[in-house]
Image (cartoon, rainbow, N blue to C red):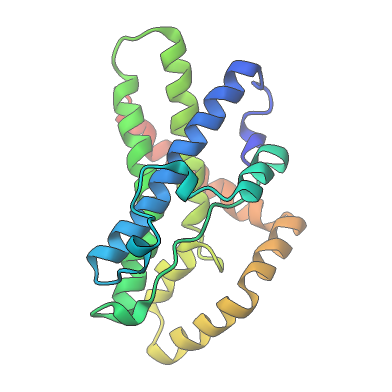
Amino acid sequence: MLFDLFKNRISPLYFIFFVVSLLVSLTIHEISHAYVSYKLGDLTAKQDNRISLNPLNHIDPYGFLAILIIGFGWAKPVMMNPYNFKHYRDGIFFTALAGPASNFLLAIIGMLIFNFDMPFIAKEFLGVFININIILGSFNILPIPPLDGYKVFSRILSDKLFFKAEYYERKYGFIILIVLLISGVLQTIWIPVYNFMYSVISLFRF
């Protein structure tokens, strides 16, 4: 899925840009989950050493390799114990939101920097970096289990529906995601979200 938007520009240099951007973006995404969870009262991520800039603490080797080969993969999930949050559902909401929000923020920062005069190669890297973060943010914000967006949007559910949905997410979430991916439905849902976020973040290019 990630490579779909770069397939006409694959070269050794773009591959390096892609890998570096992906490592940085995934690392910040996962740190954001971990840090917000910690600040809201759960020490689990901190004890797992997930509040760290070391990509090795966040990258799943198989998930990262899958991204490079098929364009779809995963990082190490940040573990949390929501019962440590002062407010159970708010803690889950803000912790989940932190990941996609960090990617959108990185994309905005990249777009602001893009406005300055700099060597062509730096502009090329920024273009990849911005795109990677819009992709990660727009994908993870989809309200589909087990993505972050599902936890974000489930905040509007009643307590009864929330806990029932949480049970089914844990049991069937990954299966639902894979079925939607293989069927092509996932990409159909995601592309309009990506296009919308790209247009919004493009407003920061002067």
